[in-house]
Amino acid sequence: MEISLQPVILSGGSGTRLWPYSRETYPKQFLPLAGDRTLLQQTVLRTNEVGDEQTRIVTLAPIVVCNESHRFLVAEQLRQIEAGGGPVILEPFGRNTAPALTLAAHLAMNDGSDPVLVVMPSDHLIQDETVFRRVLTHAVELAQQGCVATFGIVPARPETGFGYIRKGEAIDESASVLEAFVEKPDPEQAKVYLDSGEYLWNSGIFVMRASVWLEEIAKHRPDIARACEQAVKRGHRDADFFRVHSEDFDRCPGDSIDYAVMEKLSGQAGDVKAVVLPLDAGWSDLGSWPALQEIREQDAHGNVIQGDVFAQETTNSLLYSQDRFLAVIGVDNLIVIETPDAVLVAHKDKAQEIKSITEHLKQSGRSEHMFHSKVHRPWGDFESIDHGARYQVQRLTVKPGATLSMQMHHHRAEHWIVVSGTARITRGGETFLLGENESTFIPLGMKHQLENPGSIPLEIIEVQSGTYLGEDDIIRFEDHDHPIGG
Image (tube, rainbow, N blue to C red):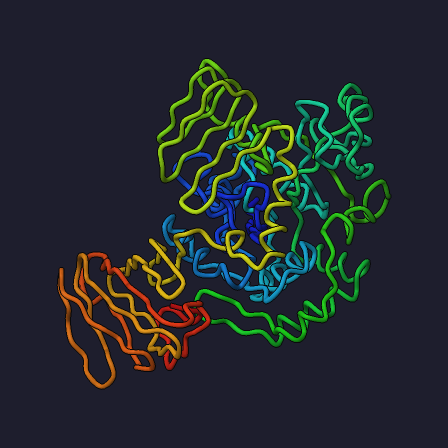
């Protein structure tokens, strides 16, 4: 038997509890938090080599559903692991997981096929991928028979931060009827769940045929089904991306896969059977700094240390330094995270309250919840070095062959100094090359463009001066590799 498996990666999270490493424009799924590859890349790769001697499973190129502002990050990270080819669905705004899956199911059936979908969050960690692939193979076989399967994580402790799944009657040696979804318990109830052996953590991983999902969402949430179908019909493919129709998707209500469909299928007899398979494979949602500490190697004092750190008489702490020397003495159970533009110090017991920092930054009109000091763009990146009331200094790195948009600024002039590489400059009506240690001046109001024609990265120091230095002071005249800024 041969079955087509369509990975659907949901990449809409913002990772606010891992601030300041995770920011809205560069959230945790794009970071290498547990190894050399990012969480998104690990998620994509773990669906390879699924199947056994009885069941041959062909894994298709992944469909990734993401925020439109993350599109180039997704495309670049897929390119790095040679996993492109499937559409990257761009959501103009988030509508939760049920609409995201519905969009993906429509595209998965575009050519008339009906693959089995494995739906996974992009920001979870699974350490034992051999076990994961074995359980996934079983889930795919059940899905091929018309079941809707989910993975329940075998609980390691009485956890109050996760939702639970209650197992029902066993249907084979490792799968059970999904009896019910259960909300996050209090500590006493969580211990009861753990001791009973009947409850599993809700993983957010689902497996079903594309047609089965579309039938069930149409039955239980026809408003979501109609809006998503229309948004796909009136959407269009744009290179690696699929752009859903914004006005149609704007009318789509938001809801999760659990609430929209799975809770209505659980504990009920019928043609479609909701089943749960236990997964014991070193799973973590990496939803907080303590969760990250659990999966990282600890020293003899229970500390996890990364970067240029000195720790003395310090225990059970998470100490990260990204840019500067970090020294701690005589502390216990602390989280200390240093980045070029922010420092976090928190007790581990208060880790879940870190998201209040990003809410404060947002309400204060600041940018540290959105951006790192280094901001990634399709053409490369730029990093703030210094700034004052009427000036700002940035380091620009432009990839070989990349071009920034032709643009002009109303309120600032710019001075460019080439540090390494070769720059092709368009300034007003002239175009010329600049090499290392050469510079040019862009007066206020002059059209200009920057390009790297060389084979190595181009590094430039940019000094901006003027009455207003915001990123929105850009008038673009044409775009090449970067339709959204630069």
